[in-house]
Length: 591
Image 1 (spheres, rainbow, N blue to C red):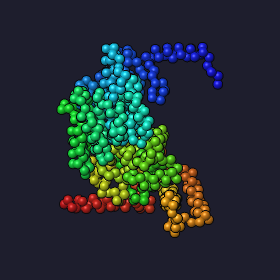
Image 2: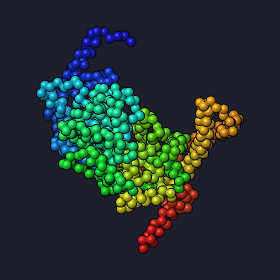
Image 3: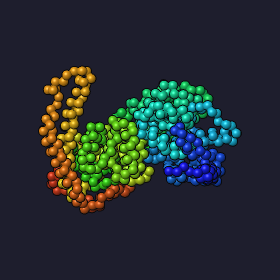
Image 4: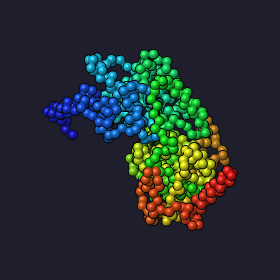
């Protein structure tokens, strides 16, 4: 295209200057050389009052929160912000997932940086061009949580000219070092990568002489293996700093719970107490515990579906077809996840995966794709069960029973967030009964969750599809496994310059046999696709599962246990019988 004339350039420049003057916007450049907008700290916002300013939050931050759609503070924010901002108290906070913990500590730490900047402006002091070091250090146990916290804070921070950086493993170390050279006031990260960079001598991270705020998010998760050691090193570094810095340092410890219900309760409590001592909270700390005795939120509907191990796939597919809204399916092993991923792909449900074996960049892409679809389906191991704030998750399905009550609560906490309704469904086989009983006993619930209602009208069709998909997956997996074994053997032999005895290789068949196998698989896939093209008969609606104030809504549906002898419910009936006998045995023993 044509280059703009000088007149047009001047006109455009005047328009930009006019807009910047009117909006009180300053421009600066980030580390990539891009122009970014930052709010003028001298903007006259004294007359702006809202629910945030009543808590002591500066009007500039309050206005930004309103612009982002945060009209009213949540309970944890109302409890934590005033003592943190007005009295500079250390805060220990526990609240249900999705309660707004990030802003409960994020706003006070940003406010303190803003106050420092405003004091410098008022006294006509020019900020030193030397690197002042990190002012706020926020530690999170997982990469996903750190990235999420960074994003949430950055949305507010850029409005008050505060730079925030995210430093986690799985990302380019060189790129993170370049970001740190820009001297971000706020650093959010995982202990492992942060400590690694400090050991490498990274100057900005190593300089904590002016540290104002230290935040430990999901502190109960930090005590698990793999996090505690590096966290201890970081705490030692902080505690060995100057008395002047330590006297002014404000600390925040936030967690999903301050209690433990697992079998390792004593060890966890001991470690948690040790962590609190190492952090060194002031005597007059504000303790806020908003967790409920039942541990799960009131707006969460809990239900169970008892079936054989083989039928878990059937009922999972039934649910996903019947209620195609944003759903998280949790499993205990990566092998199970990969098998489900293959089967659900064959059934054309477009599942996404999230587990520790996937590279960080792909994990983030999968999360973004899941969030962008109303009917998104994410299969996850427990790497995703903590801290992730995925908006609009309608259903959580426990395909495999979680290992303890804490994991159940954290998984279920991905739905029914911030007073929204949500469903948590347990798929229980006979082998799961002991674990299920332990979990429910730990949760101290008055009643067991009700049986999930199943519309039997089209379960036979569901079973046909799942059965065929399983056969295809089994054949493909068998061939892939043999081929992978041969490839591994041949590659290693080649590197060692050794000849390979073909008798040691898996038999994949000759070219004719391989073609026959491919043709058979193609025929089965064509058969499956024909089945998938036929709409399923259903008397009920299709959409989000109806829940109301934590109760099952069962209009138009019947429970599997109400159906008279039927091959389709044999697995369910078997489990019901086992459960009944087990309950009777317990009652007899008590007598």
